Length: 130
Image 1 (cartoon, rainbow, N blue to C red):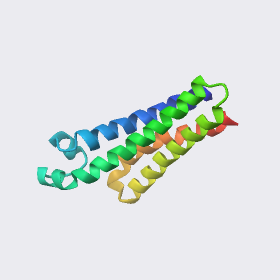
Image 2: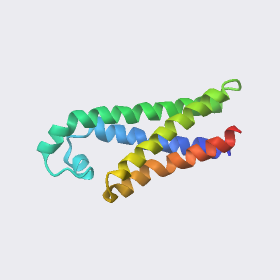
Image 3: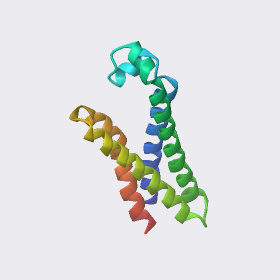
């Protein structure tokens, strides 16, 4: 179960690194802002500071998950720290996906991409850590 939990947490982390890239680095590119449902470059410019900030939130959650994976995988004495980081980071990702879906059914796909790996990682981590 440990390997599964680490793989799922890694997937959740990788998705959040991708979200960081899209939101903080590529937001002003038409392909990116169209993906997020914006209709004009002007809208992308207006929302760029918000997206930039949100992207960094995603990056920091990914770093937390990756640090947890590192502690569990490479430290014999810090498993508790690792599992705590994994569960906390992935639970925050899951919470964010629930907030996203609460804004409308049109966000169901995006919320699933964000939330399903996180949910499964939390569940697997809680089983593996006991």
